[in-house]
Image (cartoon, rainbow over all chains, first blue to last red; front, side):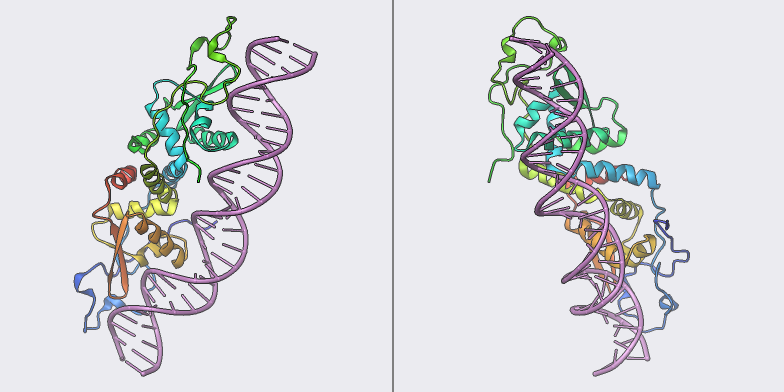
Length: 137
Length: 137
DNA sequence: TCCTCGTATCGAAGACCGTCGATCAATGCC
DNA sequence: GGCATTGATCGACGGTCTTCGATACGAGGA
């Protein structure tokens, strides 16, 4: 399995306003330059952190799920699944699928009361999740 | 085109700790209840707002793009495309594709200096974008 | 015990996305 | 003008996601 990130070991040149035209033959443009030509780049985030963040973003990258989070954020009590199926023009399996994705991501939790299932924002959500959903009014 | 959201016009019952078992026949469980059974639900976010937020989240829902934003957030100058192609184990068209997605979302902007293209965080990004990328250290 | 109802799961269809090789456009040097 | 280099675009492939109908599961009520 290949590494996901590589690094330019020796930065050669960098962003420069006067880079457009230079008549002097500058060593900054050695012909063997192929990659890492311009400047060193910040150390990448840890792969686990990147996957955590992109995973949260991906789950929130759906209009229906954003609406679900909004409804839960505005609710004072757990919300019944049947209310979600009523609120969206989607089939019941689809709503269940979206709720499952949010639960798998740690954004919501579910509880059963008799026949009904209720969902709420995860009281123990991670700081990253809390920050990510904060801009859903 | 059907409406994307519907509303329960008449809420019937709500979340209740003692809902599991009740021997009294309660009108809260009328047999003709099918949807909107439990409680009124918050007004949905405006469709434009939902699409704006989910669109931002979707663009950030990819590990490579999160890394790109991280690198740009840590950089003090615009970063050359060639440095991104050096940093990731991805082909040049793929890197260009990711940068284009970030640019289309208003997260980054690009400028050309001679043969090179440089990218930076959009100085005029929307408040939603600014908030969304804030948890990318 | 059987039946009903709410919800989760399964399987499939269609759309969308990430990736790459090939190619094109634009810039600058010879 | 010809050539080399950078980066964007095109077309295609494989995988993933959203959606749905059908079905399974579990909890109550008759």
